[in-house]
Image (cartoon, rainbow, N blue to C red):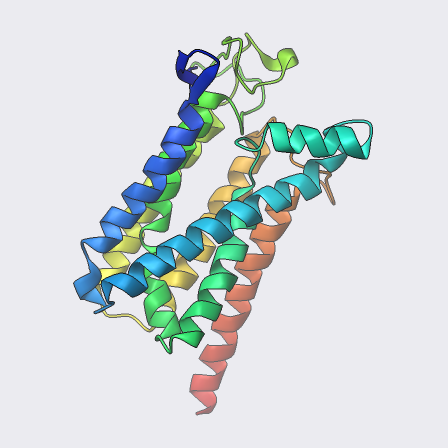
Amino acid sequence: MHPILFKIGSFEFASYGLMTALAYLTGSFYLFKRLHYIKLDKDTFWNIIFIAFVAALLGSKILYLLLSWQELGATFGERFFFALKNFRYGFVFLGGAVTAILSLLYYMKKKNLPVLKTADFLVVGLPLAHAVGRIGCFLAGCCHGKPTQMPWGVSFTHPHTLVPPQFQGIALHPTQLYEVGANLILFFLLQQYYKKPHKNGGVLAAYIVGYGVIRFVIEFFRGDFRGGFWWGLSPSQLISAAAVLAVACVWIFLKKDQKNG
């Protein structure tokens, strides 16, 4: 595809970085225009966006390093310098999602914000931003799929693509675009759900279940290295399954509590 948009001297302007920035801007703009839904003041909102950005960046990079550390080089020094040199690439979304959620929960509790109500508002914009970000993955060649004979298979041949040499020039599942489409559908559904009367935390739970299912399914078509496998499942699939199971358990518990009450 187009991992490098343009080059000035030795400086390369990466499409991945641009789309990541656009992803945050898109999600932030969508939510900013709807602050009146929740009566959240602008300073607090931008603090939340900043915390989410930093926490997501760190969390997604840390999880990537934990899963890929042995693949980055033969020695600790090689792995460390490889990670520094290629810091702009190599992120695992679920790691960023977990650290961002935990960081925001702490901040919202500290600011005495209605946690579940605020989370419901914020999470609607997440799949929209995620969809934009995945376009960057497609352009760069990261998060690529397995070889396929389907007519919509995509070949990556750019010399700077992140697709490994053994997969270049052959048709691959465009898993990045699968996730773009799935996230846009999830965004639309969450948007409609949010507008209807719902219990606080309901939209957040719907997002966790929705994206958990999306990621679990798409992982079967991924062809990039994502860590080891347990019981035939990738780490991302295990995290997704655990998250969906946790939401289901909470929902069952609340239902039983309502009946007993």
